[in-house]
Image (cartoon, rainbow, N blue to C red; front, side, top):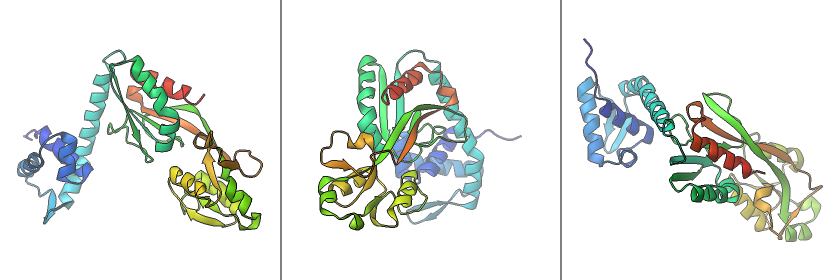
Length: 283
């Protein structure tokens, strides 16, 4: 007869695997590091497996640990799903909603409307996480993800919020002081097809890049430093009188903005209302 294992030990194990260190796992779980260590030792004793290779203070999954992580990960995903379902059973505008969004977009378009929503519903706890990478909805890292690309896989509810136009901008002094043949561009990353903005720039820049910058705020800083021409979103350039449009002023490209949430949460009132507010932010 197979004996049931202690779920708490497995929960600590998965947290350690996902965070990468006992200190990070302890912070996530709200316990002391020694508690994490004790739980892992208990799990190894229970399973009879050496789950980690211990090299000084470093922990690395052993071959058995990797197999055990693969076997137990669905348990944690099921636990996250159960937690989301339980939260969805609580009606009304209360509880936490975590929104993940690109930092510059969150600052320019989202923080104001979300603060207004919070004032309207004081029992609603809103967390806005400025993240470029796609947060895991399955692991509960976010309830709503705002992204400029539509996900193609997963049990997700996807809704279009609006669109953002990118145009060519430069500092007025840069255009005045630089001949057309000497003008350079500020690239979005240095991988040729990494970002739609970079793909569009490649078509017109003829390889004339002053530098490559991943972050849109740093692109803006490079433009303000008279470093070149960049494809910037309109929300970042509004009311900046030091900038000027380059070329025809027509959008270099337009990107759609999407809200993404797990299907199990899409009917929750606080999720639906928050997405409505995000949609209004793009009108």
